[in-house]
Length: 307
Ligand code: PSU
Ligand code: MN
Image (tube, rainbow, N blue to C red):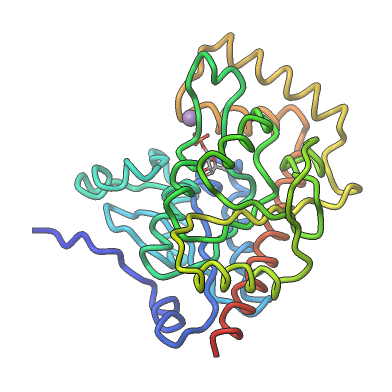
């Protein structure tokens, strides 16, 4: 029998044992969200951003059926460069392990695995959510329902602007997922600094996020995830006119080509990257690096508060 445990990279295992700060990172962004060859370079830069802010990066993914927390550079390279890497949500983890697949974990799967490994902070670009036309297609990312039951803080630039942002915020409320703005009361929309919706709560520092997490733990009430929404500064966002035009074209191409299911998000992101000639890619990379930095500072604050 194969042993289907979660395997920890040695640096991650040491840090968790010693109570030092660790930040989980996803791999779908690497395999499906960013174009080659930039994806591998960016994946390494994300890990470096976490290190620079004083935490240990734990990129999560599956290599030949082994579910790994803290991919080493060979494994990261494999997920970034080989063909046939599956996009794994939570429900895909077991069949992928049993069949020996290579797979990249989404926000949903990364959150679930990170929490199981004892990691409390996770950085990504933008959360999945309710797709436009979900009233007909029922296409809502498993990221939402997973966060409802998974105790982890996810640092992101809100949800991707390709989604129905208002509906996604409604679903997060229904599911009981906490949402706090980082130094803002406006919910960001990934490429866009402001997606057009108010937030009830904002926090001013990594220490304050740590306080929110401590309050949740101390109350002993079951809490799921906490979304820490970290907007890009307005002068770094994707030009709004370019954004709206590119999105309209992308949604039309999606309908024309009949793309559905888990291919939708990668299709739209890749449309953005080619149609904006790299402008959206640069913005996407900025978002992830900023989130990695903030997540690491939150993990440092959480570890300091425990001492
Ligand atoms: N954010 C990015 N790029 C990505 C994603 C998020 O900047 O590629 C990925 C995440 O892994 C997220 C997934 O969980 O897209 C959502 O896909 P879906 O809508 O199929 O649930
Ligand atoms: Mn979907």
